[in-house]
Image (cartoon, rainbow, N blue to C red; front, side, top):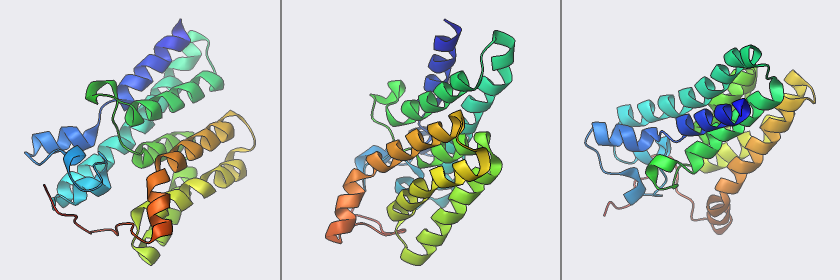
Length: 203
C-alpha cells in the first residue's frame, strides 16, 4: 500500500503541466492549441514570451527532481528502497506525459526527465543537458537534441551509477522520451522539422 501511495503522489506531481499553468497565469494562449500543440517549454517559447518558456522549463524540471527526492527522503522511514524510488521516478514522468489534470494529454517529458536524472546523480543530468546544448547549438533543432541526449543518457548512467536500478530506470526514461518524439523523428527524416525559435502560424 505504501508503494502505491508513493507512485500515486509522484504521478500527481507529474500531472502538474507547467506549460498550461504558466500560460494561464500569464494570460497566454494555451500551448496545446498552436505550434506543435505540445505543452512544453519549446512550444511555449513560440508564444514569444521567453520568461514563460523559462518558467515552464524550470517547473517541469523541478517536479521531476522533487518527486524522486521525496521518495528518496521518505523511503527509509517506510521500509522502502531503490526499486520503489525508481517506480516513483517513472510515475512522475508518466504524470507529465499523461496528466490526469489535463485530459491525459501532456508533454514529451524532456525537462521532467532531466529533473529525474538530477535526482539520480547531478552529473548525469549535467551530461544530458550538455549533449542537448551541443546538438541544439549545432543543428538548431530542439527535438533532435532531445533524442540524441536521451539516447546517450543510459550510457552516462552506466558510467556514473553502474548497472543497478537507476541505470535500468534511465533506460526506461530514455525509451519513453524517444517514443514521445516519434512524430519528430518522422519529420526529421522528411526534412520538415521545425527549428528552435521558429513560430508556426498562430490560429
